Length: 607
Image (cartoon, rainbow, N blue to C red; front, top):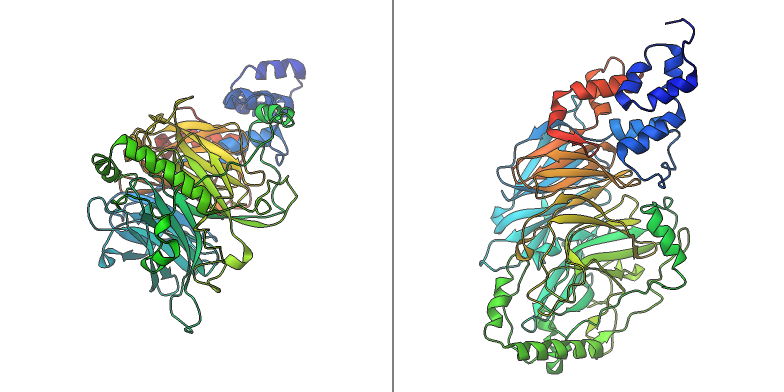
């Protein structure tokens, strides 16, 4: 339409400010004047804040070049369109993990198999390339998997079949060249899961009970290739030996490689951080350090190391887990509250006397851009009750990166039975999931909060937990939890039935499963929920492709894996004859609204 303008630009802008964004885009097709006004930056700034309901104190993403393009990114690049459903598993799917290249992913399930999938087929579909059953090793199910750094090996963690209250598990290492089993490692309790430290070494756990509610967790470094090249070469080495009290144990280990030069700060809560900076001089952050309880035994051959003086005067009882805590409750029927109080007091006294003092120079919170490269071991733990409510952090030294050296680790005095934690962050709730950002700068934690101001008087009776799941963000550079939590997803199981909800973090987004039969996607910069991904049952795990954050997978108790892609990628796949000429924003959104496959999800937090 080439006729001259009838209305001045200022009046057209005022009208557009009162229209929804779809109407603005449609109006921009009427004439050149309206097209120019419909791309006005002030207009899209107002539309952006009003549509996404973001506080105006939050600035635009530092990498964004315009408000128009930023609106488009959040609307068009979210993996919320279901494009494929994988049904090869025959039972609940518990975990998903991508390779570092993104060309494959693995899945674990209650059907006791680990399956490998190819994501680089020419037709764009995902297909299974291998399946291994672990029942021959007496496993009950597979629960977790992880590719090593060069994508040549796969770590698979599972749960043993055994007595009803068994907490034993095992880790298997599978070669991805020929799918042969290279090694198997004991892992106890099974929800330690295990993880890679580097390309050739993995971390497992062991647990020893020395009282009704007092135990010792030992973390081991294992060589992935257990073939012995020489009798002088170790295949295992003890990393840390940590005392637990009040029925707590170490669970969910992961390794963070924190680089000195990494991405700029992720600003997560502007008002809270501004206030925190004002109060910094008045309230200096102090690391929380455990006074870990009494001493405990190691493997049978280490009994002499501990000695009789370190053993608590109580019988050994069955090992509890979050799902098998009934054993501890049963053991308490024969022990009165006075005896329990004495045990706890004695455990703390012996912990203080026999725990190696932390080296304050090992972990020092550093400002962005300062300090040196560090490798942290992260895990869930607790000090008040059996439910995991704290994040424990241990610095891994360079000499601890291989199994060379003494099998029992670094030398210690005869009175130092245990290692102290270098840093602890209390979440004040039941932790049910953790995930690292791609640069390992930020740790995201799923938790279900305890009531404010609650007091725990009985370790076996933790406070009631909220149905809402909070997603905390911890900066591993400053070792501080950011003040604002993300919230949208829900869970319903009580403390003693809680299970892990795996989450994943990409460059711009964070996603998590939930018990409300949905997966959720948030924007990391703006702290807003962008999409809900529907399943027919609990969503246990989600995973972004490291090669393309517009590809997301979700796994559910409905025995399926769903593949989600962004509207932009779906549009490009449907129009392969125009691969180098992306269509406009209007066409994208109109086609997205018409796409029936998007009916199973809600976008931008709106149903």
